[in-house]
Length: 148
Ligand code: RTP
Ligand code: MG
Image (tube, rainbow, N blue to C red; front, side, top):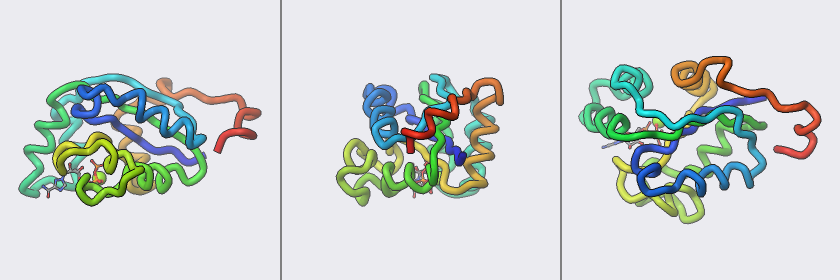
């Protein structure tokens, strides 16, 4: 089953949006298989956003993502990467459509509430960066009959 890494960013945690965000993915029928509230070490943040190293916003991005607790999650389901990116909406909350998480709650480009892996490759990399194998759970196969 496809897996993705989703993370409520420090602005989302401080604005008490964790429950609302988790509920959206649950209602969609996706499965939560791992989660933790954590403060990201700077080195982990630099690795996580490695693709943006050297860009003008890189330092601000790392400072922001390590500025307070995040809620890191692994979700699974058919096409979960594409579906969750659709539900998250465009990077800039100004352009994200209403009905998407960033469209409904996002304030600024730099504080856009949630992160979601953008490909199979980045999902694998990010899950391994944030979670140990034993922190992820398996559901009874029977349950897969009524989830997405
Ligand atoms: P994310 O990785 O956080 O889920 O966001 P994303 O895929 O939608 O966007 P990405 O291009 O990966 O950018 C990562 C984060 O960097 C900030 N950003 N700032 N100042 C700028 O031009 C700029 N561009 C991107 C955003 O906060 C974005 O979420
Ligand atoms: Mg990204």
